[in-house]
Image 1: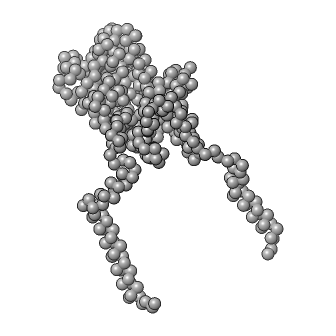
Image 2: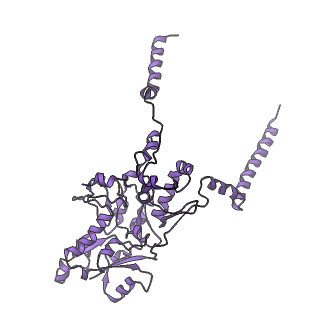
Image 3: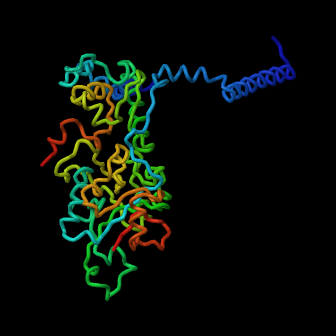
Length: 135
Length: 272
């Protein structure tokens, strides 16, 4: 093989660059996300149950919120009737955050883990933020 | 297996016909409801079979919301500021003291609000009178016609609404609006909000905003905030209902609208 030294060196450098993300993250084990349900409101609930089943909320909360936003903003609807027949006001601030008032320990846990950055918070006010930003 | 050209073409033809037939049958079955079972199952799997969204029983309903501002009842600066302040507060409107300001409801001098009505010798009482200005919620809104994403649209009750989720910040609507009712967020508005009301979202950099007749309050059964604090100086109601308060006020008083000659049919009336 002609120029084997140059080719092999080049290949090593190439593979090194391609696998850089792996080297970069080595030793930085990601902590398994554990969304916390420890908020005052949830603690006081006798039956700890979200508006739909836990698995549904884990799998489909994004689709549910998307449905809610179109219903509220575009179709004048404000009430959600859940599968179990209960009524809820469709509001991130008034309904979701009423119980899940710990955005950092709840929402961000999984969102950071899978590296998605929902931009809800650019407009919707995180629980507790109104005090932090007030001046 | 040896196949000649003729056999090959036959096989291709038959299999093609079978494929097309199955596609057509699939299409027909969904038309005749045979495929419904599958869809329902998919919905049930998603947990969405029984759940649904509905309007609040308290929601105020109308065919066309409209507002009459009785300028005779606006006497002191306090009368104007009360309406402006409450709107700024509950809608998290930032206070930006430059040309990048955000306005939902504000004051203009009479000659700026009604340029075609004005003349040099107009009665003193009107000459320097401030006028309360807000989005006119036009019956034929030019902003809605030009919006490329459907971010601004007309609700069934006539309110010209903003869906900030869909706004891409092109500002066509601002160019189209003949009343200057729309403001653009050139920057993140949050640092300019004195106290953020957690019940209402702020806006973000790059979206256009305006008054929406307090649609969120109407949907919960409340009157618009400025109407509520105006001590009867602002009348609000259904323009298409002949027995409504606003129809009564309009039939008994002389009223004008801003730039009616443009044909947008504004739904904010001024009693002067």
